Amino acid sequence: MFRIPEGKSLKARRTGDASNGSGIFLTFDDGPDPIWTPRVLEALRLADATATFFVIAPLAVRFPRLISELRSAGHAIGLHCARHVRHTDMTRQEVEADVGSSLRNLERLGITPRLWRPPWGILAPWTAAVAEDFGLTLVPWTADTHDWRGDNAQTMLEVISPTLGPDAIVLMHDGLGPGARRVGCEETVRLAGPLVERARSLGCEPAAMNADTVTALPAPKAAS
Image (cartoon, rainbow, N blue to C red; front, side):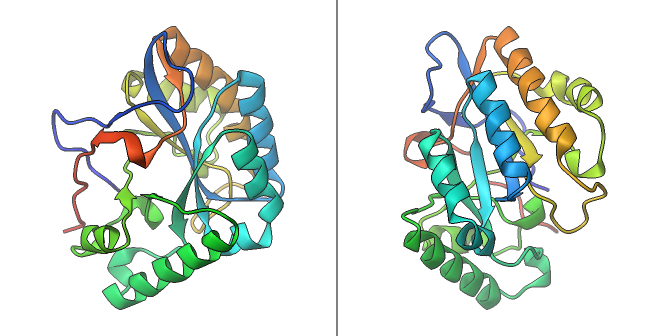
């Protein structure tokens, strides 16, 4: 997974209204999913919060209506991948082809991502160079819900609460990616509202990320 160097944090201007506090960034990987993404969107709507979705390009092409709904609701869209494979199990050329095809497909949907979270958050020694070549900013996380395991919402909230605070980046999933031990994302849907409440109790307003306003992003470390 990504590792944040000691003493460093993501500093970004919020795209939502965070005038009364610092921003916190809710992020979702592995969508869009025709069942679970709409339910996550509804939970965020009820909480009056925005988030960032790192999408799998072939799914975005398959479900363009969901991409339109994400954009209409004010959420940010970043790139996850075309093939959900660890970069350490691929060649640089294969990853470059994956990114290139993904960006072309997303561009056809009117999206030009500037944020990139690779599969599993695992980097090869050359991943950062690929990101730079494509004009992408690598996005790590600082709080992992491990929702793919199927933990209940209350347990996930309790586990990540000590890591919440200004500029925290929370990892969740609105789809069932490889390795998921659950049959649905119901507990992630249930987590969204209480997580937003907890963030606001800490003075943090959930907001979508914007690569154009990132002022200091720690360099994630490649897998050794």
